[in-house]
Picture (tube, rainbow, N blue to C red):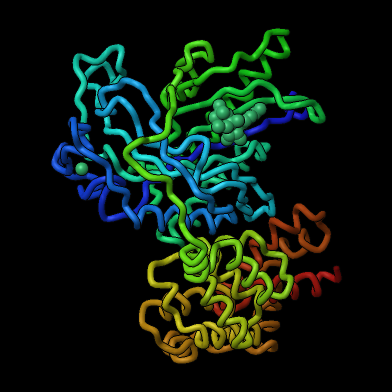
Length: 475
Ligand code: ADP
Ligand code: ZN
Ligand code: MG
């Protein structure tokens, strides 16, 4: 079933900007404060109050726009009119037909380039909390509203429908989050609501035009995002295969029952009666401002991955390269490789052995020295891992740590002798090893390596032992 259908996904992401104050007033932009303490007449929508645009929010909007390769355009704020208790003015100030950023793209670690339609500025709403009835509005006893979030600056980042799976969508959100954090535009914490995702999902048979989409709300983790897209695609495929149409609507993801439910249909969709905000002038950042933002952009994750991959010289380890950048270990890895360390081994350490805190401040020259000891056969992979952990903790030289731990090199002769002794001590197993098929051999390799490790108190190199066993068995 799955192979006959293609999933199409476009995402709308809301990111709260990391400004000190709100978008149109001087109230603090801070998460987690006592409810309704960071408020004033402007963000409470009191009559006669007027908005004043926060310059730093505009700077951050331009910064993200440029990081996503968008054109920064003259833009206009508009009123989006609707009634809801957490929107005290009865309208939200947003950008509509003239957004600040248009036509960009974001490149994912897989190489997929997802188009960015627009990334516009708007204010956040307050936060409603429904008390009782499991937090559902229809069953709650009463509702509370916190206006601390009212007027917090947001960027709404709208992708083109360029993703083809739940995995693409998750990778897109991870990458976007990495860009938001790297540029200091947002702390992008899904669990605190400073990054929120709505997913538009449709299905089609490959080659056909796009199908009718549904928009899914309430995705507050990468896991929910992936599950909701897969569930929604299956629901649509089942409908189409039963000869029924998909109806365009907004659906709500229910994490508990693992399904999406109708929220409102296209017919019930609100008409927001947008019109230009009369209390704000059009926004037209000049070329110098944009050029300065460009010049100050930090290296972005995609660039950093490319730089490490190039330093690694075509070692086929895309996964490890992405992980290195994710954990902020790419500068270390590049410097260690430039200091002469084997790229493959450096990336293996980054991926598997440098997961502890403080790993990024490791001295790359010392990391290179460790890798050289390992490649030269002075340390086994297991010993190298132990030494590395201590290097991160103490900052000491690998040679000194290895010596203190008694990790002397085993000569090839000593290793061969140890292997031969273990073979002689286990004749029945050896016979099965020599005469066995790949599977038996595989199992018995583990046994023999274990015995040699025991005999040498962990000093033997497992790979070298395996090679010797094969050689002795004449394979
Ligand atoms: P609207 O005008 O209702 O906001 P847009 O055309 O701007 O709709 O699209 C909103 C989001 O839906 C975008 O992220 C876009 O990529 C996505 N989208 C549009 N068409 C489809 C489709 N057929 N399948 C999946 N996603 C879609
Ligand atoms: Zn305020
Ligand atoms: Mg749109």
